[in-house]
Length: 374
Image 1 (cartoon, helix red, strand yellow):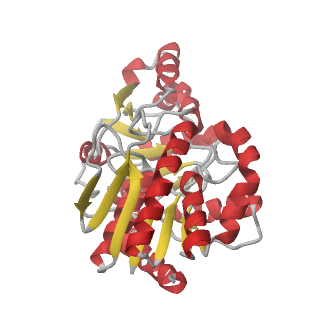
Image 2 (cartoon, one colour; image 1 turned 120 degrees about the vertical axis):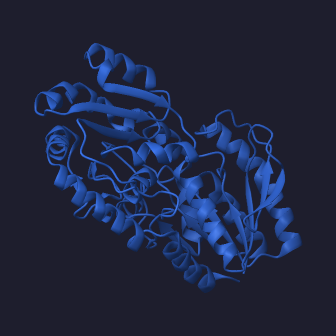
């Protein structure tokens, strides 16, 4: 198949959605498909290069940050990517357009279908579903009719978790959504042998924004420490606009000696943090299918997370799914029970390998793309 992929984020820029785009396109190229990706440039990356058999084309849109993108920057990407997509379709005659994120890339799939009868599939990641991000509430209300038109004309709609599918159907129920889970590179993200030491390292890895919920955990660290003989260390990997408030909260609660803010880390750097942690936590209010949990699972960590999107698929005997108000009791239980941590950690690794490989995801997308291709 000749596949045109449209995604405003592709490594080295972006987060979990970009990571998914990278591994899915890589997997499709390994199956001898012809893959072209139109994405955004950042910090003078090459305008065109080929990696892992994937042709990557970058438009010079106004992107200021590596990890996140404003709505204005998304629109600038859309404005510049659409002419390139038309030009490439005229020349290459693709079989299908694979859209990553309904916003901002969805309109490109819509236009290509209307003008060239090119079928398109939308892969949703979370923030592109109305209701997921409060900062876009007014914008989504304004462009709501256009969003529904783009979804309606799509040949397939795919969510990465049952929870995200439900959120999407709550917004637009006239078409069904397939579910294809995210995957994880279980060769790269793998566990190390650990001993039961006097310190328990709790890892949080994500962008530092209010929605991720870390502000509910920091004030409870003293209480957790009082209920265990272990030395507690909360390691925070990531950066974002909420970091300063979290650092102030840490100081005001007198737990500076228990919290380490490590900042943003590359993929190569972060694996060591997973491997040297004992517990992974994600007190988030909304997710799609959190890649950080998959990476923690692949590294053999027990997980405590909220019942956000993805939790139902990810956690089964390898951790706890509880509201953030009850994180302290479950964290304390794991801290005090080494055997439980070991057992749940092994189950995390087992589930990551058997259920969440990228090969499974690529196989699932291949079936849909073959079905809808022109």
